[in-house]
Image (tube, rainbow, N blue to C red; front, side, top):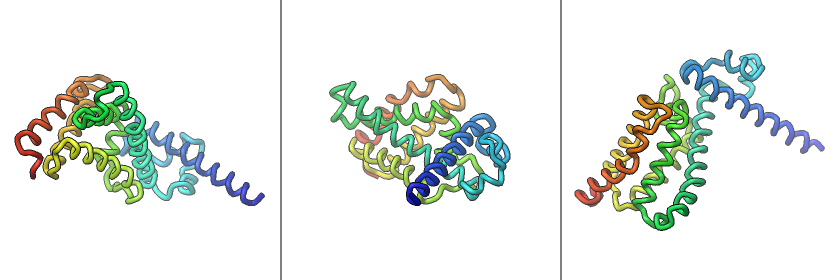
Length: 208
């Protein structure tokens, strides 16, 4: 019986934490990430601001949980759409160039559908906030997945990978800053990958 009660308390606490995070995302989209306040967040979930500290020890702890949640959502998106899109295209399944293009499209679409989430995951808009090692683990998985896809195309230098992340991050930033809700920079996704591969693989063979 006591185990059941403890399990229910744990579940209730986790559900409350999720409700707080959902409200934090909603407020951040309305007011911007730096404008998120514990007072507004408490009001959004029907709690006193001080009560939030029972679930998160600080505002940065909420940002940290949001950061982890966003990166896990991206990993889930990759797992869901990578295989599905490969199946839709048939011959693309074992083509590393096509897979890199596919992963890049998935990432850019993920960024474009929620500019505030994109800011938190990529642009560091909150003064003083650094993700914890635990929360950064999912971000590191995203980075390694991308690195492996680039390496599979025969481009292995760290310099080339820095260029790739800078190139694709620039497309995402341009899209969200200058054509939110549109496709002006999203439509350049495949062309950017092809240009990158031609330069680093065919000219330099992927060497540093």
